[in-house]
Figure 1 (cartoon, one colour):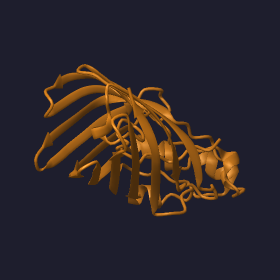
Figure 2 (cartoon, one colour):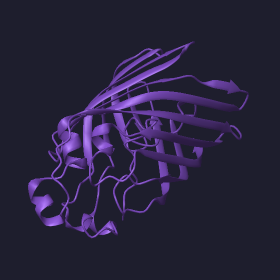
Figure 3 (cartoon, one colour):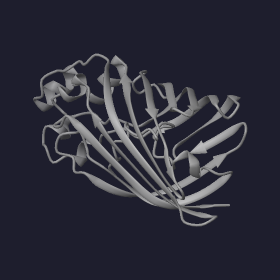
Figure 4 (cartoon, helix red, strand yellow):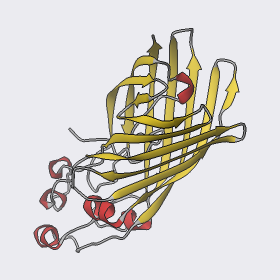
Length: 249
């Protein structure tokens, strides 16, 4: 199965799609769908079902594909140790380009690090710095963003702007072409450096009743020069969208 390219969300920023924070209760379960455009050459876009589990307490949280432990949580400032699954990756057999089929597989990984959020009347700042714990890339990713929520009764809309930094090792693993791969595939050898990928995101939530809510999240990412200049990448952007419903216990 091909993985959606979620590098990308931030609301994904425990590493994946999460419900808008206004709808994260003590425990909530949900079901939705997520679709994303692939950045890899010859790989089709796809849509997948998305089961969602959210848990929030004074000390622990779990959202989407990640969770963490709060070291500081006063309602305004939240600093935590966090871990999440980064579902980037590439299976050579998923591409219809014969050259891509000669490449090595790129795997998703478990990221771990620290996260900080500051919430005020003027909006929210969030940032996460994490590293690959499974030694696939030995790289790091840093995501930082500003968001502002508009509340209109049961409806909330939250636009945001941010950027994700990938270290040289991270970009090399996911977007580089080694000498051996170049020899097999015919692609030019490619060794990217580190780089920033800016993005715009928009999330919306609607409280249907006391227990049920609906939500949607979208993100447009402009790939860094190091990503888009790779011979195995055939686009300069990625798009991710997710929507669903959740039930709060």
